[in-house]
Image (cartoon, rainbow, N blue to C red; front, side, top):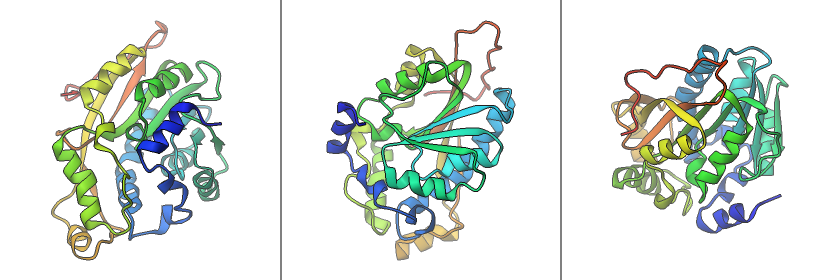
Length: 272
C-alpha cells in the first residue's frame, strides 16, 4: 500500500501521531489536535463557499480530500451536500472519520497520496489541508492531485510557510505550551514557501486563484488558558490575515479545458 516515498516520510516526521489519536481527534483539549479543530472551523466554511461559487457545485460534485485524517474537512463537505472521498494512510483515523460522518455521503479509502488509486480527471475538486508539510516530496503529491483533477477543477490547500517565524510559532510554541505535543510533529525543513507552492502548482497546470494567511486571534481569553494550562479552549479562534508569514490557505484551478471559464483572481491574491 505504501510507496517508498511514504516510508521515507515516516523516518523524517512523526505522522504516526495521528494514527494513535482515536476519538481524541474530536474530543481532546490537551493536545495540539484541538488547535487543528479550531483552525478547521474557520477554513471549512470558506472552502465550501468557494466550491459552490466557482465549481458549478451540485450534489454530484465529486471531491477528493487527500490526507483527510479523521475527516474534519471531508465530513463538513459531505454535510454540505457534496460527494466526498477521503484518503489517508492511517487506518485508525479513517475509522474515526467514517464513524463521525452523519450523512453517509463520505467514502474513506486507505491510500497513498503519492499513488492515488483513481483514474485521470476523476474529481471536480481536490483538497489537501494540513498535509503537504507532512510529506518529503510535495511536488509528487501535487502531480497526483493534478492528474486526478478535471480540467477547470479546483485544488484547495493549507500549509505552513518556511521561515523562522513559523518555526517559532508552529513548532516551538506547541512544544512549550500545548500538552502532549509529540516530538517531530512538524519539521521546519518540510514547510513550504508560498512562492514555491505557486511555482510547483503551475508546473502541474494549476493556476493560483486566491491565497490568504491564517493566524490565531491573539486578544482572546483562550490564549491565556493555553499559556497557563496547556489546554485548548473549545472557543479558541483563528482569523484570516493578509500576512502569509505563518500559515496560509488558498486554491488553484486546473487549466486545459477552453470550454470552462477561468476563475478570476481577487486583487488581494498574492504569493509573496
